Image 1 (cartoon, rainbow, N blue to C red):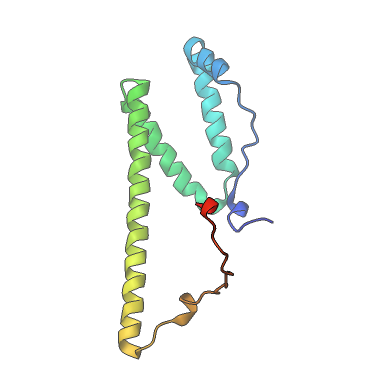
Image 2: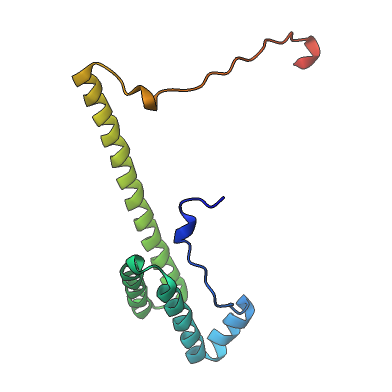
Length: 138
C-alpha cells in the first residue's frame, strides 16, 4: 500500500560509482569529478516536482557559496552539517509552536463551550481476562 508521501519521492536514476572510484576521481581528476557532481545535482533537481525546484536551487546555491568560502573539505562538511541542523531546529520550533497553539485553541474551545472535543479523545477499550499468577511467572 502506497502512503501519502511516496508520491513525493523522486528516484535518482543515475548510477553512482563506488566511493573508492569517486575518491580517486576527486584526487586525480578534479575537473571530471566536478562535472559528475554537477551532473548528478542537476539531474536530481531537474527530476524533482516543479514546486520543489526553487527551494532545491536555493539550497544548492547556498552549498555552492559555502564550497567557495571553505578552506577545506572538512570545514565545508561542518558548515553543511550546521546548515542541516539549523533547518531541522527551525522545523522543530515550528512544530512545537503548532502543537502549543493547537493546545491553546482546544483550551479556549473548552472554556467557551464547556465541552471537550471528544472525537480527539475517544479510544476503544479492550477487556483482558484475569489470569491466575503462579510463583514461577515472576
